[in-house]
Length: 187
Image (cartoon, rainbow, N blue to C red; front, side, top):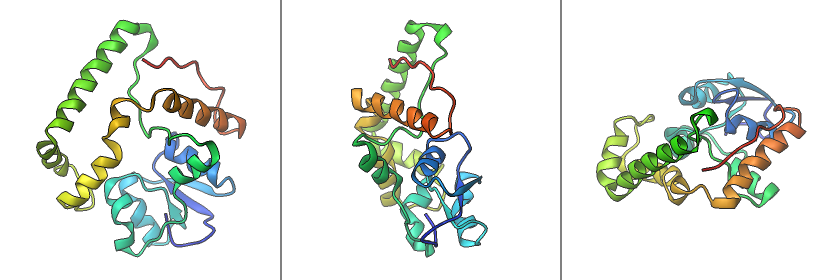
């Protein structure tokens, strides 16, 4: 994450992100400041912040190349606390008023698209590299994609994945970081 053992100011990729909630739960005494996700390493290197939560491909894979070191792996911290998989950094949601049939249709379309990309890996990686931040080569891009496009992309872990999201929201609420968790329906 950064250069100090006990950070006071941590750059986060957005106020209402999973990464920020995990930072605030794991390190309740730090202050956070929102910085665009692809500028966090620059802010740490420049000394604007003490540390940063890295979520983009360049940062998660290359931070050591820039003279930065990891203070905490939030995924490891989460697992030690809960024995659950790390909650997703993003989800696809459908407004409840559109109904379950629309939600199922969206899910099927997304699964088909992801399945195609997974079965045409080289083509998908070449396409992904066009949007890569941090000048990643094919090996680094493949490593990053494996972190986020895997069996959990197709099924976020069944009951454990759903439980991880519910526990994260409950912990955030208990610590005064979130309002009462909403009713969730997983399709």
